[in-house]
Each structure stands twice: as structure tokens, then as C-alpha cells.
Length: 94
Image 1 (cartoon, helix red, strand yellow):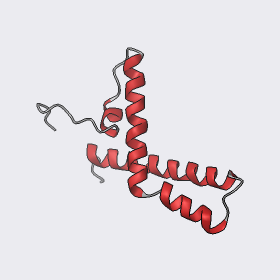
Image 2 (cartoon, rainbow, N blue to C red; image 1 turned 180 degrees about the vertical axis):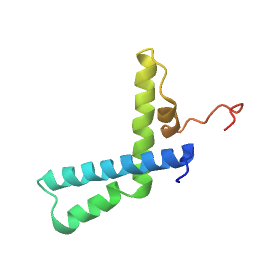
Image 3 (cartoon, rainbow, N blue to C red; image 1 turned 135 degrees about the horizontal axis):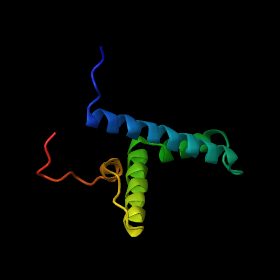
């Protein structure tokens, strides 16, 4: 019987999936770019799809979504807050 995944494990998996999607989007955009071919396209991909860049993009996109949610008068989902880098309340127990 498998155990129930912990919240941190689920968030890590979600970040990983978002990272893969962003990398696929970057690769597709580079393939469509009329002036990037061969080694130049590989160099650009390596720069744009680095682990640090992907982590920053995920956090930035989540932060924008949190701001949009607040602007619409909605409470942002806890997962989105976590992806955006907001820390949980100190009184929270897991």
C-alpha cells in the first residue's frame, strides 16, 4: 500500500511539471524563430531553460496569478501562494 504524498512532495512535483511545460514552450519558440539555428539555438535554449531560470519563471508566473486573483477580489489558492514564494503563517501546524 502506498503512502499519501506529503504537501511538499506534491508541490515539488507540480513545480517539476510546470518546469517541463515551460521548457517545451521555450523549445517550440526557439524552433519557430527565423534567425536561430544549430549551435545558436542550443546556446539560447541552455540559457533560457536553466534550472534557475525555470524556477524564477514559475515563481514569477505564480506571483502574477496571485496578484490577478487579489485584483479580482478572490482569495488566491494556497498552492499558488506557495509557488509564488509566499511563506505560510507561522502559527500553521502540519
